[in-house]
Length: 301
Image (cartoon, rainbow, N blue to C red; front, side, top):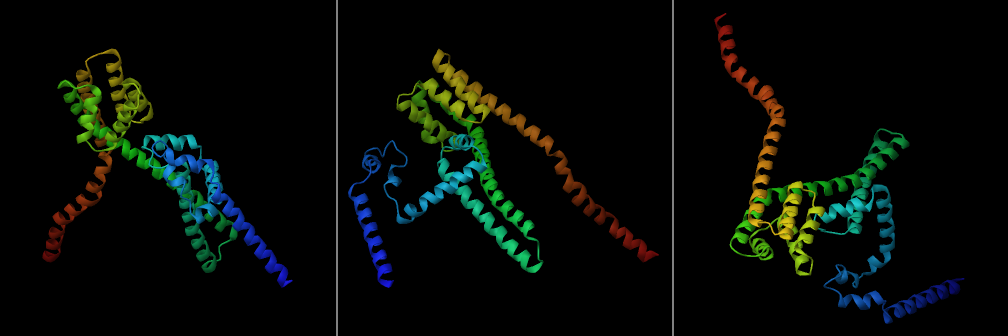
């Protein structure tokens, strides 16, 4: 029996060695082509270098991320938000992050459930519901973090737009073409809007027409003022209208919109601003005003 087990293990090991040698001896077509397309394929540098852990755990992780994708929503919404965010990672990587966040939430709720079960004797269905809530909460928290990051980026783009529009108007008024002026603006500006305009400039350099490149940015972004800015430039370039006047008008519209939003935000925060005044500053003021008089009355009486 011992000899049979040893022989089975030896034959299995030799079979694995031969299979691995054959797979290394003849690499697949993808690994042979990717070194020649590193400049156009985003995963060319990482696809050819796979560790043993990635080879062993890759299928299981892909199955888990597919399960998360099936339960957490469609991939179209995630892909659209990642595209508006500048594609810092792919949809699969985001699903893997959701899996990690869900696992962390599940681990925290499992530890809490063990503590509740050992100290208070909480029933098992309640603990199971708590663990499921931790898993779903971790996944949804990762999704909400992506949305919050996107909202912050779009707010930054709206803040940068007046300065970018004025600089582009100055460059065009100095006699440069829109593409050259855009390149000059990108040399001195840094930010979210500059990154998006850099993508537009890269598309123009690869053969995309200028109006079409700005129309794509207008369709991709979620900021209305940036979409109007891009559509105005596309229409001005396509129809030959004065671009300087369009850019100055766009910058003035954005500043007026920011001023109006600030006034509206101040009106909404007016009640919240009264809370510390009524419940903190006014009681302290009344205390300082009436406490010495009360002490004086007690002493005289």
